[in-house]
Length: 240
Image (tube, rainbow, N blue to C red; front, side, top):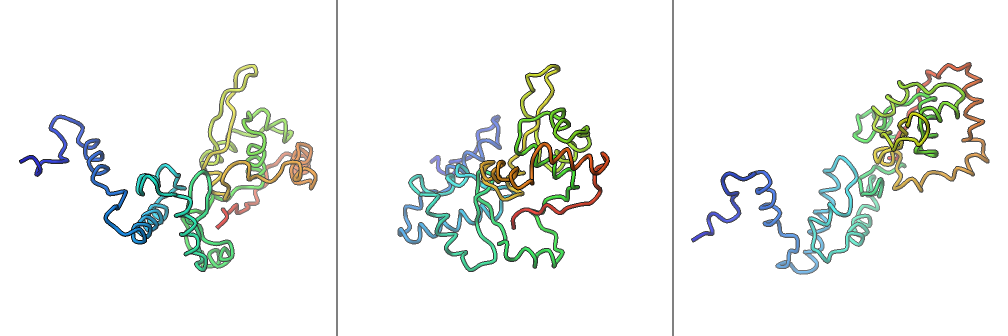
C-alpha cells in the first residue's frame, strides 16, 4: 500500500519545494463538503486572517489561493466590510491590495496613546516632503530635473533618506546625456498615504491653481529660505 508515503518528498530532490507543493495540494480550497452558508463564512474568515497577518497589502492573486476557484473575492470583501462597519478599523484597497486600517476618526486617539504602530510613516522634513511630492507628480524624474524645479541642488542625502523610507525606487535611465537614473515612487508610498494607485493623487492642476504645487512656488520656497533645508519635521502619517 502506498498511502502512508503519499505527499512525502522523494529523496535527493528539493524538499522545501516538494513540501510546499504537497501543502498546496492538501489544502482544501473548495470546501465542497460544507453547506453553502458555512463554506462562504469559512472563506470570509480565511481572507480576513490573511489580510490581518500580512505586512503589506494583499493582492487578489494571493487571496485566490485560499478560496474556491469560482468564489468572488470582491463579494467576500464586501461582506467583510459590512461586518466591520461598526468597528474602529476597516479593510481598504491600497497599493493594489487589501489591508486592515484603523479608521481616521480614531487617529487622534492613536496618536495620543503614543503607541508604536506598524503602519506609521517616518517623519520627513519640509524639504523632503516637497521633493517626494514633486517626484510623485513628475515621475520618472532625475535628480538634476528636481534641482531645476527647486532652484538648488537636491542632494543625494535627500534622495537616500526617501529611499531609506522605501518611498522611492530607481526608474529607467533618462535619455539625456550621461543617461542618469530617474526616480519613481513605490507601492509602499501608495500604502503609506492610503492610495490605491497614482490616479488617487490630487489633481495637479487644482493644486497649482490653489498655489500648493508648482515649479515656481517650489523655487520661491527655496529662495525664501536662502537655500537652507528646513529642519522642521512634519509627521506624514498614513491614512489610518
